[in-house]
Length: 208
Image (cartoon, rainbow, N blue to C red; front, side):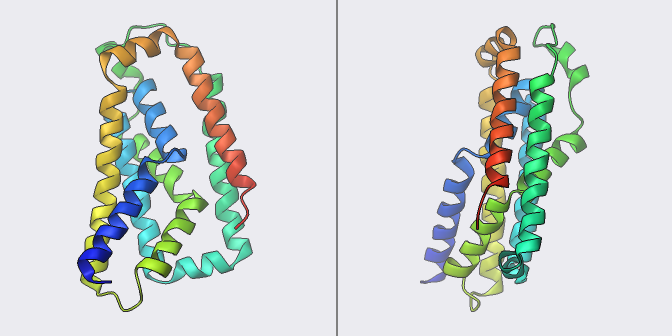
């Protein structure tokens, strides 16, 4: 496989992984709806930082150790599951804001750092992301792949994820969607909370 084909293949696989429903998508949509477009976008940046961590340790060969060690894999798995369940319970128990979607709601918004942290933890503690990148660095990116090609692939994957979740944040903060959210806030919060809890349970039960 030549370098250009390799880059395109890795980029396509990463895009498909990013747009498929999962913890990252649910969290990005939730933060965009509940808080703001800015928070949704920074959640996406946090997810991108999480991808950088996965790419780094897989490139360094640590991903192989994680995949082979049941203890290490289970630690990551249960931490990720616990975090998603915790966030899900918070969402289910959240009280209705009872205010209009406007500049007034910014006072209830998360800080950039908080949004980054949520996105980062959601991605970096997802064992399925670990297995995805391990598979990518095992079957697509070979040991003989030039370093500059890995750097290009890494940059494209991170930027693709950030761009995708920016689009998600922009879409879910359109006025019509925000107005609908304002009318059904409790239902939406509980639905997303339940999804996060179910995803957490699914991850906890995941077998390698």
